[in-house]
Structures are given as structure tokens and as C-alpha cells.
Length: 456
Image (cartoon, rainbow, N blue to C red; front, side, top):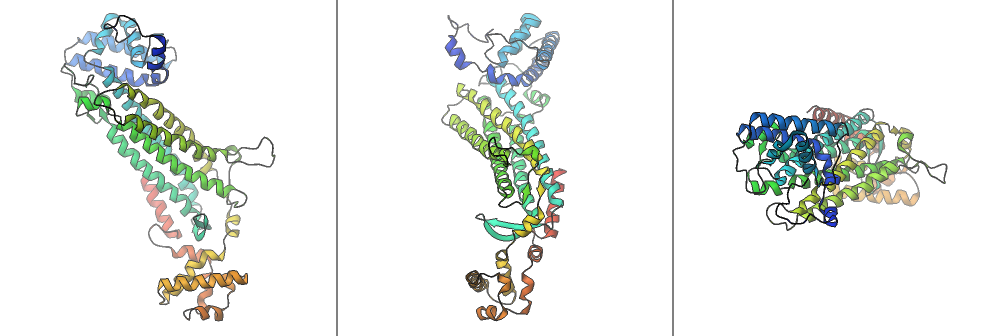
């Protein structure tokens, strides 16, 4: 069955069908297509375009089609070029010619736009749920390590001591921003195109506000020409997924580094590690490497789709058939990645002793400069003085705390006997009490605020 063809004297060639047909990938929209058709049948009846009895016959047939899909019993025909054709063909087989009335005033242009928005809205909700699970795992690990100290890095060089909880919570807030972007995208995509027709609107008095409400949208689209060609919601969701994947990749990179025996800060559960086919001793964090690798794929999907949209003329164009596979692929990969990284985080073993052993007094150089500032020395002078002391200690092959007071006072008279108190990693962390800092009190406040976010 074809939804078109009266104008043509020959059927489409098989090589065109192979290029044109989308049933291979858009069949996953069957539930949304049938739900939209049920609502549209009611709208046609309310507008007195079809009788209530005809509407009930059509709706009954559509529900049977839904049951066949749900039971994996639906049989596709060779002529089914897309999911809309397949559903309408089967509906007509079940209810007869009245099934042909369903498409009155409707185009595949507004139909597919509606189906895909419904699918995207549900996918966005599911993605939000998965992100919340990851945030919960990060939060749970952080709560147990507010006082556990590890080296913090900038440029992947030792910088200052921070708490493990502070490190973990940094990713919580990245994913919170992802969720905020997702909520914003979800709100924008909740606009119903159904009733827009091919481009000019519907000639029958269907109530588009009611159609939108019945399908769970917030509102109908404002302009029928824009409605059938708007794929901003696809670009939005691809962007959210891509940036979220970037954050997953950054977390994966930290896990890869910190689980390397050269660091040994964390150990991955055996269930989320792999081995080597040759080297028996290997414990590879392959899932984390896949996190990094898949990120490039998701970014590629976004860039490719934006390139597809570039320079399209007004109205629906067949180029827009390229909207589904990138989004299906990106979200399928997100739904594979997120459970694995959530389980990895939840099962991480935090190796406190290894973190403690990795702490070096160079990490306290800033604290030494702060000591001088508190005694009245301008920070730039304090920074220069401590830099000189660090250089002298390195030349002598000793730790900063081994530098005698006379030497320190030779660099700056602001040093005194109490300078020894600076060389305490826990004290360094606990001094960072400003909002968002690494002190245990500040991190615990972060955690409480994060819990409030999870309850939203």
C-alpha cells in the first residue's frame, strides 16, 4: 500500500525504494504514530468530519495494530515505506475503507513531526532519570569521603589538596547543568505540530489545542509552515547528549588516571573492568575508554545533523528524514553508557592510603604564601618569596617543612615559629571554607544542596 501514487503511471523503482524508504529505522515510532492517530480520529469526529461510529471503528482498529506491535506479531508488507504507511495499511485491512478517512486533513509531514516529538519527549524524560541515578551514585560516594584528602591537579600537575568528596561533587554539578539544559529542551519540544497539514494548515475545524493536550503537549505549534520543518528539538537533544557525553568522558578520564597503578587512588570493581588476551596481569578500564570514544561519535551526530539543516528552504524537505538515525544512535549510546558509569562510580573502591602517600608538600606552597599574606605581605610578594623557597628546597633535595627558620626569614622576615603549622594537608583543606570550597563543612553544604536538587 502506498499513501500516494495516483499522479504516477509507474511504481517507484526498487533502487529508489532502497534510498527513499525509512521503515528500517522509523518503525520504532509505532506507539507514537498510533497514539497520534487515535487522538486525531477523535478530533475528526469532534469536528464532525467523520461520525462517532467511524471514529470508534478506526480507534478499535488502531488498538489492535498496537497490540500486534507490542506482541511483536506485526507483519510488515514489502510496500510499507515508513511506519505511517505500515500502520494505515494494516488499519485498513482490519476496518476496511473507513480506515482511509483517518488521513483526512493530515499529512505525513505533521504526522512524523508529531511522532518524533513524542518520542523525543519520552527519551528526554528517560535520560533525565538515568542522569539522576548517576548523580545519586556520586553523592553516595562523596558522603563517605568529606575528610579524605587527595592531591588536586591543574594541567595534570599537583596543585593543592582537596577532598575526595569535592572531586566527586564537581561532576555532580556538571550533570546538574546537563539536566537543566535537558529540562529546557524538553519544554521547547512540547509543542504539537499535528493539525498543520503538509504546510498550510488543516482545512477541517479540528481543535489543535485539544489535540495537543490529549497527546501530552503543552501547546500547539504557532505556524503550520514552521511546524512541519522544525527540527530544533532534535538539535537541542543532540546537543544536550553531546555535552553530557563530554562530561562523562571527563569523568571517565579521571577514573582511568586514578585507577592506573601509578596513581592507585581508586580500584574498579572486577565487573566493570576487562583483561588482556595476552597479559594476565592486566586490569583495563575499557568501559571508561568507550566513554571517551563514544563522545566523538555523539559530537559527530550533532555536527552532521546541523549540517543537514543548513540552507534548507521553507517547509518540509526529504532531507529531514535524516533527523532520526543520529538521535536514535546518540540516545541509544547514552542509555548504554550511563548505567555502566553509574555502576562503576557506585562500586569504586577509594584507596585512602594511596591518596595520602601521593600528597607532597609542594601542594602546600599556596598555603605558605597565604601564611605570609595573613602577616601583611602583599600576595604578589608572598608568591615570589614562596617560589624562591620552593626552588631552594628542590636544589637541596629536602621537603619544604625541612627548611630551617633562619633560611625562611632570610627570604621574608614575615616568617615565624608558627610556620610549621602550615604543613598539614587536612588543615589546608579545612581552610577552604568559602561557598563551594573543599573544606568539609563547605562540601557537606554542597551535598545538602545537591540532595535538594535530587528531590526536585
